[in-house]
Every structure is written in structure tokens, then in C-alpha cells.
Length: 291
Length: 307
Image (cartoon, rainbow over all chains, first blue to last red; front, side, top):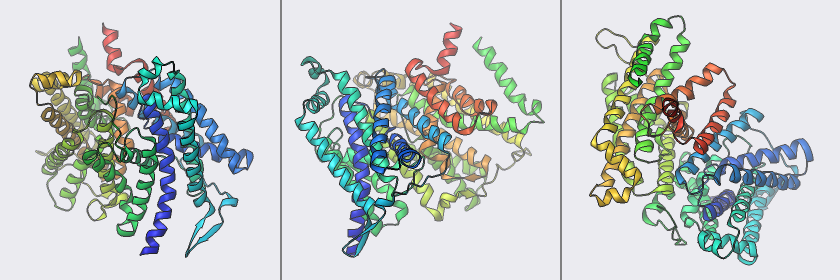
């Protein structure tokens, strides 16, 4: 029992890493632009397909493909911010509906271009198994966790110590005041959006080799990333990290005690319960402008 | 003018089985239009009139559909009683879940409706003993004959679907014109002001959530009776998003919106014979463009053309 729990905890850390990457992007965008982008999971999926394309068709180098996929998705995110979300600024309902439209566009565009069947993405270098006590995990498994932790660290330092990171934090706290002190909030908007979609692409590129690449692969990470954000406190960046990991571990460990069919429901139940009993999440963020 | 157009439209629709005797395919597509329009009417009341964006609407259609399916197949209930029970079950689920969701506003309301939609879908997909799980619930009968009129053949089922869609639109018409509908419009425009005027906003919002869900349940029961199988995929997140799409494309908050939206969503791609995957790409783009440039939807275009 204990070893099963431990094994599932490590599995949960891996799944949670992906939720953290999705949650970070969504929470940054939400903080700066007050946009809840339901299409974020679909962008993760597009990132996985783009990575697959670069890896299998063009370069054959997995690290290079990850970077290229993140770059392509950053550009896509910047384009979406310009074309769709900026014109809808301040209209919360229409931003959400537009993001639902984007889900349809990208999911079906990928089906039209690559077909509805799942793709395999075998990375020989990271397929090896590492013994960890009695259990064995693939290198890819550990890579997902390591890369995510590194990204979290870099992102935190960037937000905390760099001038532009400070501008991002200032804009999230009070957009008007940020404008008053001369922060170029529109530049903060598009850079944050591009950063967020690049993080989603990273998530997709990292789980591609572990599972399969398929058109609906982003749906679950989006919902669970969202659950992580709520758990951590809507708008809190550290909260998104902690929340994402907790959701990942909770649902993995739940499979030891509950039928696996209901694994996904753990995140949904956490979402509703958190909102009902603890609406500000563990980091107690007050939510601005929710009216 | 509008009444004449509506009258001609209705006469054409009711004569369709006679005119399209040799084209069962056309009837099939029109039936699907009706079956998509019915839940859209329910969502239009919530989204278009009361301003409640639910991202789990089709899950309530599923509650109705599975309730009726279990009662008919396992309980050997009569179709009409099971239909009633399905509509009631969807309405009760809407009232209960709506009461929780409505404690939240804006983004949080959408997230909670999304979460409940996914939970209900998960139950349909996994509770194998009752819902038969992911493989679907087979053997759902077509409606029992009523006064010697059998609903088995396609043209006859067409009339049932048409009647149900007309009933849903009639309910929408009555609600929008009633005091209840005017309160809903007031809530959408300024909830605080409505509250200050002494309106119990929670009660009204829960009522429209329940009503919208019950109408969705009607669509769900007829849908599975038409297909003769209930599958969880008919009521998943993608279908809930499609319902939002139909309402927005047709024109949220307009009486004819759900009909226009469903006609375009189901009918146009069949007519154009576009490849299946491209049709949703096109619809996604249309949805984004409508949100950006024509928030009144197709009904808004019609209105402007007439003005």
C-alpha cells in the first residue's frame, strides 16, 4: 500500500507538472489581462503537435524541437492577443465565448491537418528506465518534473528581480496605476500572452513522448490547471504552482483508493469545494474586478 | 411582415414530409436541426436573456435523456411518462446544481458550470450499471403510438420533433413577454439595481436555470429516442460548447436566434457538403468573428436588414 502511494505520488508530481505549466500560463494571462482563456489546453495540444512535427519530420533533435515549439506557440499567442483578446478587452463574456471558438478552431484544424488518430512520439534518449528504490521510472518521467521545476524557478526570478517581471506584477495588481507610472501595459499584455502560450507548448512537448499526441490531449490539463489555479487562489502565481501539484498528486493517489474511472472527477470536486468553502484559495488572493 | 414570414416558414416546415417524400435524408437533417434547437432555446433563456453563460448545458440534456432511458428500458415505462420524468429530472437537477453555481458570478460561475458539466458527464460515462457506460445505452424505443399515430417512421417522428421545437419556442416567447422575462432582462442589465428594487435575484436566476435545464432535458430525451441509443459523447463538454456556439451565432437574446443558429450549425455544412473537420474550423472562426464584429448574431443581421 505504502509503495503504491509513493509510486502514485511520483506519478502525480509528473501529471501535476503539466498542470502547473498550464496553470502558470493561464494565471499570468488572467492576472495581467483579466482574461480566462479556456483555449489554453488546446494550445498545449497544438504545442505537442508542433513539437512532433519538428522532431519527427525536420530536426530529429528533441530539445531543439521543444524550443521551436515554444517559439511557434509564443508567436501564435501574441497573434491571438492582438487579433482576438485585445479588441474584446473589458468584455468578459465575449472573451470567454471567443476562447470557446478558438477551441473549435484549433482542435479541428489539427484534425484536418494531421487526422483524428493519435500520433506516436518516441524519444529514444529519454525512454530508458531509472530504478528508484523498488520502482522504475522512465527518464522522460523525471525530465518532465525537472524541467517544470527549473521553469518555475526561472519564471519566479524573472517576475521577482527583472524590471519587466516587476512590470508584469505591477500590471496584475493594478492596471490603472501601472499605466499612471508609465508601464507600457499593452506591451505587458502581449508579452505575457506569448509567455503563457509558450509555457503551454512546453507542457505539450514534454508529455508527448510519455503518452500519445492526440487532438483532445489538452482538455484534461486545461480543466485541472484551472482547478489548480482555484486551489492556489485565482490570480496567485505561487498558488498556481502549489495548486497544480496538489491536484496532480491528489488525483494520482486517489487511484489507490478509488476506481480509476473516477480519477478525473477528483479535480472537478476540488474545484467546486474550494470555491464553496474557501473561495480565495490557499494563498488568499483577493480577486479584483469580479463584478 | 415578420408574422407573414413566420407563417410561410411554419407552413413549409409542416408540409416538408409530403414535399420531401423521396428524400428521407433531408428530413433526417431537419430533425437534427430541431433537436439541436431545443436545448439552445433553454440556453438562450439563460445566456441571452438572463446573462448566465453556462458551460455545462448539455449535461442537463443528458440527465433528462438518461433518466428517460433507464425508466423506459429498465422500468418499462411508457415513453410519454418517461419523457415527462426526464424533463422534470433535468429541471430538478438544474435547480439543485444551479443553486450552487449561482452563488458565483462571472468567471467563477462559468468555471463551476463547466465543472458540474464534466462531473455529470463522468457519471454518464462511468456508472456502467445504470448508464451502460462509455459504450452507450442501446435499445431506447421510439415514442409509443398516440391515438393510432405511430412515431416510428421518419416523417412521423419529424412531426413530433417539430412539435417539440415549436413548444420550446412557444415557452420562450411566453417567458420573454411575461413579467418573469422582464425581471430577467433587468438582472442582465443591472443586477444591483434590480436587487435594490426588491427583486429576489437568486430566486429568479435559479428559476431560469431550472427552466433552461428542463428544456434541455426535453431535447435530450427526444435526441436519444431518435438515435435509439444514448451515448455520453452526446452530452460532453464539446456539445455544451456547441450549444453556446448555436446561441451566439443565431443571436443571443433573440426569439429566433436558436432556430437560426441550429439551422446554420446542422443544416449548412450538410448542404455545403464540406469535409467534416473543416466545418467546425469554419464555425469556430465564424463564432470568433461574430463575437468581435457582430455581437447580435444572425438575428441582428436580419433585424438590421429589415430596418
